[in-house]
Image (cartoon, rainbow, N blue to C red):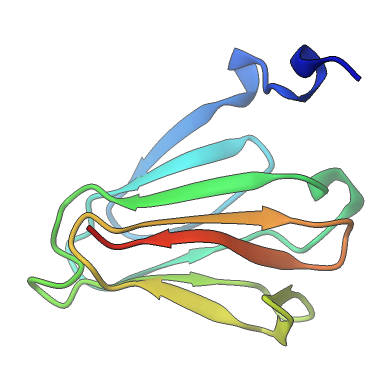
Length: 116
């Protein structure tokens, strides 16, 4: 396998901005959150087409901690996050970032959780 086979093409790198939370789809990649209060980002159900899928979620507003506007990343019913059924993880630091990936249709896993 060549290096270029594993590098996403530009059309696969999709940015979306949200103020109210949302449910992600297979085209989403980078999610910028400019929340007006606590919000929830819901991952899709783990599926074979999700294998290797990565989502990066960022507190662009810088208010996750300052104003208690946490960003919760939730998996749907019947799906796991880091081995926990119906699990969730939150960005609670101003300008924090979480990256999550899907592995072999077994669920979602935290790749990194950055708090500046």
